[in-house]
Amino acid sequence: MSGFNQSFDDRRKRAAEAKKALLERFSARPDPNDPAVQARAAERAAAQAEREARAAERAKAREAQKAAAAEKAIADAAAREAAAAARVENEAARLAEQKAQRDARYAARKAKKS
Image (cartoon, rainbow, N blue to C red; front, top):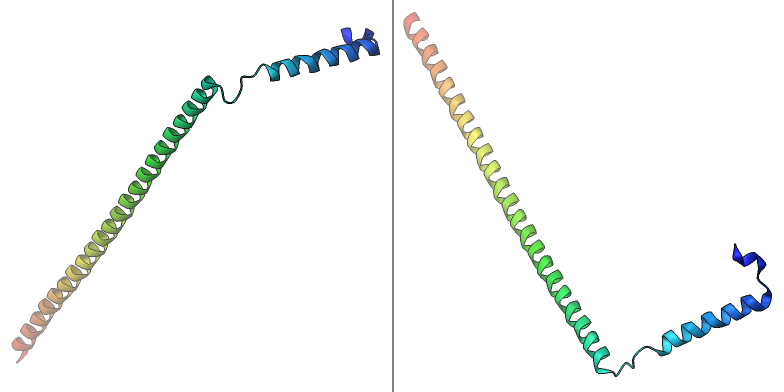
């Protein structure tokens, strides 16, 4: 709570000191043409390029995985459709066999009667 007993001049003096420190910090920055700054910038650019390359690889892998999943879904659907067709065919064969047996029994009854 030291701020309560400060005069206007003290506050103005502290603000000026803060501005001066900020200016010194800004002016202490190295020149953009400095080799060390350029080396750090090149390192950052290389790291960014590596990140982008990894992101592209992940995207490519994700697309390949999606394509494989789509192919698997198509194959599964085809297998289900083939199984359904086989069930329908088996059911039709079973019904035809039952009808043939029924007709044979009917014919045998008719043959006994006549």
